[in-house]
Length: 236
Image (tube, rainbow, N blue to C red; front, side, top):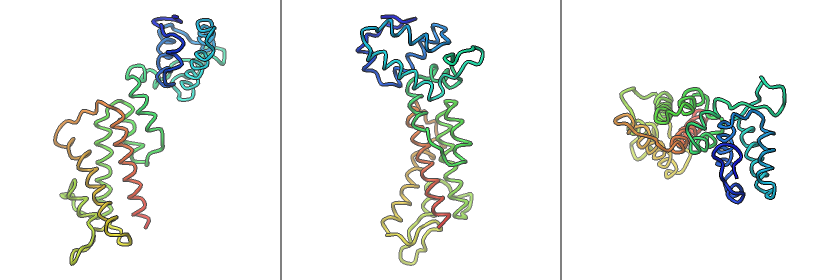
């Protein structure tokens, strides 16, 4: 049942698709048809699927999804509320695919200011390795600054010194919370060591290719969590 170019899905296929997958197909179909009025697109869908109101509903939901996420925006050159044009992010979504859209959705929260300003733009440009590495470098820099440790101390060794629990004659690290159980203190140290060792150190020595944008998004979210833990330490 073609609507425009290359659209051959049956009604049950339309209904079965997740809304984000369906929305990207709708957006590509509208682009290929050079459509500028989403009401007109839906009218044609109603004709094509006139015996399947559930499919028409799913397609309308897909348009709503596109509108709500800014992948299409109002076309100021057309004098009708239903006019639209594909946004810059919409074009990026068409170029980079569903995995990129899902990763961007995963990052649809406000990151701490330094990651918002530096890491998110790299991610949105599709440079996932740079975004992940930059985020973890910012964590490393902040730990060093807060702990007042030398520049020569880097990576997991830095995290060990900053968060080491006090044992015997060994004084606790400058960022260690001495009010918590010893196991929690060790857990905090290992959390920072593991994050830096796995996501910051390898790209410093070799190329790490983040083919899955969701993985890069998770690294940014982990860096955001570490930064927020440092905020709590700084305020305590």
